[in-house]
Length: 638
Ligand code: ACM
Image 1: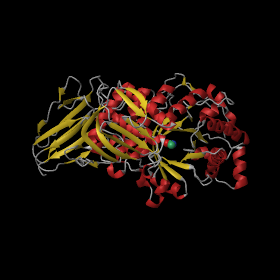
Image 2: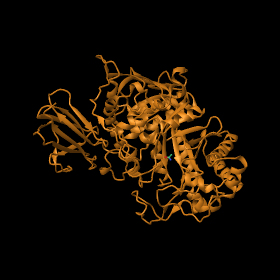
Image 3: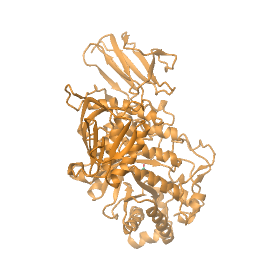
Image 4: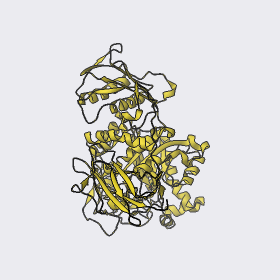
């Protein structure tokens, strides 16, 4: 199930002391790499104390079309910093862009970035690598102060952990207009993600214009109401919908392409099709009429496998091939329930096929994506399917996207298919980021920033099968995401963690170091008008009685600690620069009239009487974090 109401996670984590991780060796001329605030953390970084004051007019060299393309990106960025760019030959340029690094180690996406002696050289084997060099270069500038153009000298060599670094946006359950989709793609590229998986159709709405089947958008793109809070009886009864025209799709594909993001469109078959069935009931394996779903639940009526249905699918996927230039097209295939498969037994076309070929319903399920995968292969494309598809009849080169358990990942890889890990427990960013009590639209289990960061997609496959792992992807299903504001709240800051687990080698991933680096990124988000969730303040605790013990509850908004002595010292921090922390000691949720945190709090505990500290972090512009809670207990027996 994609969405359910809050399901409590059962883990109780032992509170870990934060590890300090500083990558670069420090000496008198270097500084810690983490001070640069780069996300994702590059593979090899040496950061120097020395800074380069980028001059107000600067010469940039480019010598081929890919370099010129990067030059235009750089020009726009430097213009936003008040810097004027002129193009020059490489000998006299202060910023040198090169796609002729000829360096096998860098591969297709890696780069080198060196800043020293008033010259920046950015080099890669490809335009894509050069684009990533530029993303890193841009992150060196102070995001909060466009007039401050002093950047640290650095020497960086970098390439990604995974080839596939994806993010899914569901535009069926809620529709997001073109500027929002572009904003979504822009930040994905900023964090070096390279796949935008665009979920375009589902039971709740069909979002792509197919000229030969106009009712798909005339009827299928609109519903009479919307369930908002996980209760199918709670519907708002407002007509809702929208779709993308051919031209809008082309615009988005172009926008993404300029940022080296591949768009993978998904038309979900043979289940999740109610919006199409509402438009053309003859596609269904049961008798209509059908209505575009207002509620979140999954339909139990799949497509029928008639020749007419496959002519329809050829047209739809043919249009996709024409509109989307990327290698992969997603065929869906998820969540065809047993009940839906049962419907096939009563559909003449389905029944005939199953009888003729002695197929089970599962094999018929496979038949839809297998047939369309062959169609796509004939057009030079590859297919992607969700792991629910048995995948036996799928051509080699199909990618299986695993949202389910690790055993399924193993099975798909061992069938010889490429695998993309989109693990529901760790990478569904529509799920709560903390205690559901304090989230506006709480769905799913709790998946904190730390949880996303701790997830290791490679660990799901045994070593011999890891070459088949293309990479990883996070999903934003939008049943409970009605606005762009909330979309970015769900996405950020967790997309930063996704970016880092996708790009940075596992051995270099350290959560406390990452959190430290997010501080600079929050400034970037604010400067670029991205909404984000302010994390609740963290507590740091000493009681002079040696190591403390404690538990973090599953929501990670709360901690219980046991101290050995009656006196304890509590510090609070929040990674977002400029936030003010307020707290209470009376159990109430703090507001801006509560006590302002200005330094360590000394608490005295009585036996059997815990002290409860509740805190929130508030930004100058009024937005607050969800509250966090610390319960301190004096344990005489410790
Ligand atoms: C899925 O969550 N059904 C892909």
